[in-house]
Amino acid sequence: MIVYVVTYIFFWTWLFPACGRVDDDVCTVIVSLDGFRWDYPQMYNTPNLQYIARQGVYATMKPSFPASTFPMHYTLATGLVPDRHGIIDNSFWDTELNIRYAISDSATRNNPAYYGGEPVWVTAQKQGVRTANIYWTGADIPIMGIYPDDYKRWEETPRLSFEQRIDTVMAWLCRSKELRPRLVMLYFEEPDGAGHHYGPASEDTGHMVHALDSLMGVLINRIEQSSMSGRVNLIITSDHGMAETGVERIIRIDDYLKPSWYERIAGGNPSLVFTREGCRDSVLSALAAAAHISAYRKEEIPSHLSYGTNQNIGDVVVIPDCGWQFTNASHSQLGAHGYDPECPEMHVIFYAYGPDFKQSYRHSVIHNTDVYPLLAHLLGIKPAECDGDFEQVKRLLR
Picture 1 (cartoon, rainbow, N blue to C red):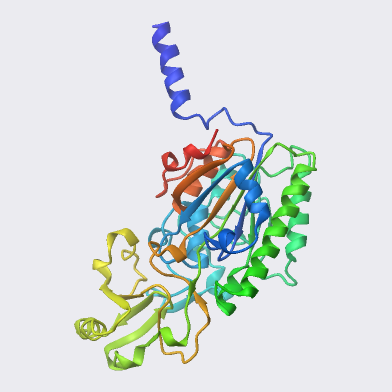
Picture 2 (cartoon, rainbow, N blue to C red):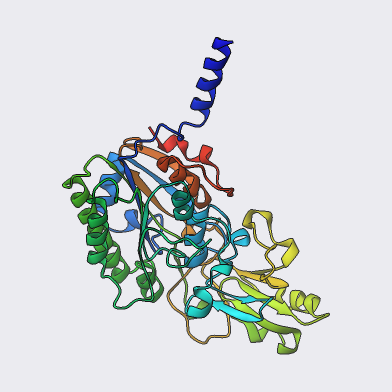
């Protein structure tokens, strides 16, 4: 009987190594550089990311759908695809309240009812682990009535400069152990803006990428020179990539759809068409004649997109080919995202190093839903239900 008990305990300790074997003196810092495409380090000068690759691990990360800022950051936080956590795009139509959710509208953006699932900072704090957060999607909203222990509100102005954000993170990390957050989440809104305005393959975007890499070098150096040297897992990743686009890649809505066929078109990329009664077939037939887009009934969206069951998704979902846009706008930015995650231009960086990660290890492709269970493992907490799979990322660890 004694042998059986010892064997039983050994088996479960091996199967769930995160529980009880995590060093609570180690912190994890995850940084998101918005719109940082997977191949920017090959296109531009990023010596500090290359330093992390030598000291730790790097991989290409595939987003969920749609590959846009709010949906993807909340997927990273919860491990759920947008269809399940509810933030199905940066803007969408709330079919129950008959209003438009938009990240620029504080009334809807700050309403916790829209944010399903359990963000990692909530999971951590429910299990007694302190967290801190600068501008991550959802962190300044009382999801399940819980905020991070320390956080900054996006709507408070002036916002922290990029340098001030690093100062704040270091101040948190250098606290006494009792007050120190074991999870820090840090958001930078670039190079997304540069990629949109100038295109991903441009000198200006290259300058921004290099500037952000230099900031990451400052963060790395300050961690290594601090009292926390050797006790921080640093992850640098992103939400979505960026594709070249322009006015020559616009499919005009009015060229194919009659206004009498639909109530409204929500979202942007993809476009969610709420059809009038009896008009869905007309919409689909008309769009079948358009090049560079795919239009689907909500219930027939390809399974790899994991999209279509949420009540706020329109009757018809229009997905442009990568780099194309379905809009009535007469102008276009030079970069866009939101496309099918199989599009390589939507893939992003994943770099990490620290006491829990392997050294000089190149992994192929991971999925952004796997970041939540990875963070839970690093913190030694039990994850909530999610779409991620720790088995897909455990090879990154020592």
